[in-house]
Image (cartoon, rainbow over all chains, first blue to last red; front, side, top):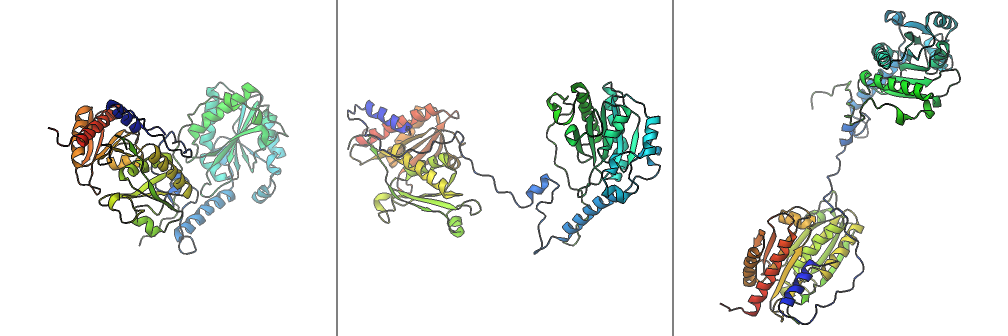
Length: 302
Length: 223
């Protein structure tokens, strides 16, 4: 190492006319060079539970002896109940028609069969197919389909708003949109058959997503270019967690329209789609972490 | 012996405690929640070791948790290994202690030391200039990490004239002046530039300090 002080003292010696040189440096093994940045004191360690402020995951819930605290167990059970209720819900009769959608049903007969036979949920029932062929305009740019999926509750609560916003965003880009369709007992791949029947360039299906703990109200959107039976998930693009605590409809709709527009421009979708060329319609900045909805109040006397 | 010859400090003992007892850590000012290992050194020059301990904090993730001078200096030590100071580095793991001790050793051998102010070791002077403070002396002095400091030490009367000369010779301000007697019966001053980071001012102050101390050492009764 170089010594500022030693240089100063050598100068002082020279001023006094000292003839003898400074003694030589002592030989030493090399020392690790100091880092570009001086080490600063470490931050205090995270306290247990601090991470839970940044996620809705069950982190830092603590324990009482060898078990969870009662409010944690009750919250878990309540959230699981929300998910069960969402899966068990069905689209009510006449809901689609009341909300201005053309009702369609798949080959599934009842809710139990819907859960057990995904393949039947991907094809239209014969009478629904006939109604689609008779009533839906053909040769459109984009066919948007609302469906129940695994959460009819989400479909009925948030579906119409997301549908309207998406259609408005598509029309704003000068794209033609097909008839409003609402499918019951539908799986994602149903969009292939419907899209092919109406000859749409892009099919979008908005459907209730598999409920998680406390989220029974989430919708997903799946988009496919050139819909046809036999398209795989590699041909699709999707957005999930379309709900108030995830991506709200007013943010999701312009992104879905941008995706559909890019698919038409690039003539492909899924793995082949160049996402770098999709219009950046929404700034992807920092978004505050989700807040866990408390379904159970903690007890009073503490 | 010749005038202004470096008096290289001796590390009288260097020992490590890889996994120290929490009670011991707490007693020596370390934080048991983030410190595990200790490095302990004794040295026959207290001010040189203060500078070297600070140097260690620049090279490794170590904290200086304990550094105290012993009364009356190394000439009156409690044992042949006591010297005049015990310094303790603390870190989260032993390797940081090793890195810190290596930097400390190099600093003592090549940089921080007292100088012979009268050519007979009758008067010694510590006119040290630190270009960039580590976080130990930054905390002790209240300056920011990376600031420069003139660390000036000499016996009582020599130091007093030296401080006056240093403060008048350059655009510096006194961060702290410890009037005699300190534990080791010296006097000490920390000066820094009036403008932050003014290393040239610190150097000029230290140069004036050297000249003043040597002048007193050679002409103690000059009018």
